[in-house]
Amino acid sequence: MSELSEALRTLVFARAAGRCEYCHLPSEGQVGRFPVDHILPRTAGGPTDPANLALACHHCNAHKWSHQIAKDPVTGETVFLYHHRRQFWAEYFTWSSGQPVHLVGRTSVGRATIERLQMNHPDLLIARNLLAALGRFPADEK
Image 1 (cartoon, rainbow, N blue to C red):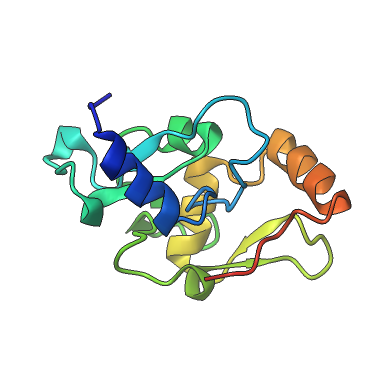
Image 2: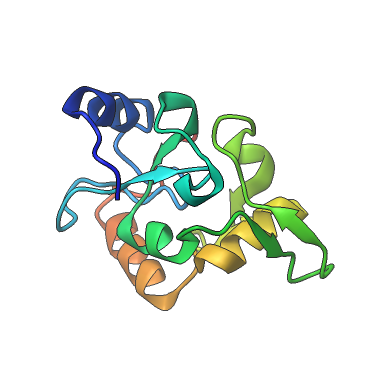
């Protein structure tokens, strides 16, 4: 884990509107601060600068780890994971119309990212359902 200045952490948090930039889980009410993820992992030379940083919940951060690629479960194609600074979230992901807390990939990148990060893990679905019942999820999309 790299050391981030509080100013850089604050910038990343504000830019993400206080929610995971992968699964959009809000940080409010969660245990502990969300980690800041290096989109291009440090192990691959990813710098610690705003263009390479994203706010991630503990679940997404732990499953992404140092991965950069994953297989699309539909096509079997190996693709790069979603990149927050180069791609627009709503073009790659949407909420299921039949199960509003279930994330659906619109593209091979979206599907592969959901699969690699286990973004529809039962624990996350429970959290999203509880937040939805409180009117706190999903947040307006950016």
